[in-house]
Image (cartoon, rainbow, N blue to C red):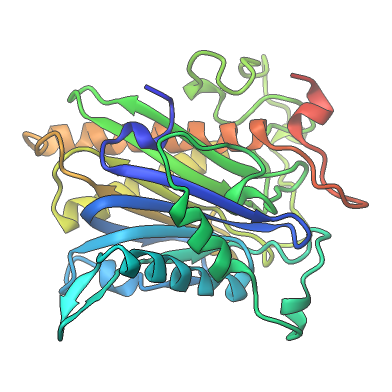
Length: 332
């Protein structure tokens, strides 16, 4: 177990970044068409091809999921993934062609200090080319923190980043999470080093600081990153279980509990918090509703841990006024 989403058989992950623009793309590539759904609980999502993930829609399987920076300009990232997949003969067969199915969600990273001429209409945004590069390098091992979609991400008081984690559920099946943490609020409690997700930490994976002895009113006071319209946390949870599309939707909904455990506040009216859920099907179906509940609970726990790992692993951007990293403030 790598403690990464790639512990789920059938998934590889690739990252690519533009350091000048302080933005990036993360691609989760499936080795075969995979049952996928999504749950959108933020009030202002930026997404592509998420409507087809509803259980009532005709297309059940997708080829990849993209998490990207760039705000709405980043939605071109899926084009790069589609092009790469088409070159591999992947996609939904229709009229003699193969059309890759690539849902995507984006986060807002336009105000992090990078130079973004494409956001002024001066040139093409880099995300299509970044996504193609990330697709080509997708592997079982990938970097966390300020990489991929987490490169330009921030939270209210610290640098955000790309996180991942995994666990074996009580059913014996594996559940993993991948998240780009760009929250309006905080992943840590008050002004201290403790993560909201501390109760779920395994093996000191995000510093082992535990929880504070008590929570004060100041600890519980909301802290905002400039307002609730410049943020979004986007994620993918996955399992090697065999699920229906409706069950994958339930997994995505339950996994949002992990965001609520790891971030305060979350699901703001002008944010676009989105969780995709995929089932690669390598370990068989859950035996009953109780087993599905085990998978859902594990997904929430794993996503909470992934959020904290993303912030813990991040490094600060090299721009004036950039948010410090957790390690800058609190040590290793």
